[in-house]
Amino acid sequence: MADLDGNALAGLLADLLGGDPTCMRVECAGCGSESMIAEMTVSMDDRGGIARCPRCTAVMLGFRESSLDVRGVRALRPGEG
Image (tube, rainbow, N blue to C red):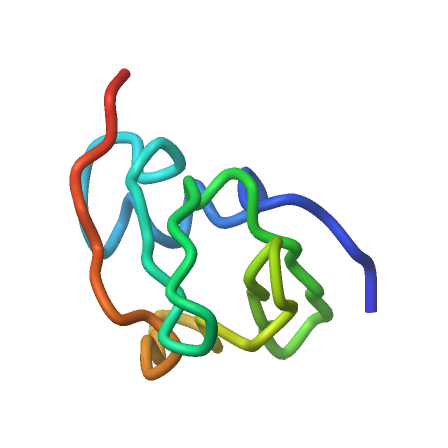
């Protein structure tokens, strides 16, 4: 798996949420910290991947094709930008 930042999710999330999702704010269900999607650590391969909290490394998002698992996200808020 290749390790990337949250910008690697831009296309997938834009298809699901519209606009530029990388500046959206997410709150980690594990530690409660808030960060931009662009700040997440993303591991991807040809089947999909996971996005981790940049603070505690808990899995926040899981994705495969056009399916998104957000169990690790307590809140998603619009960002600035």
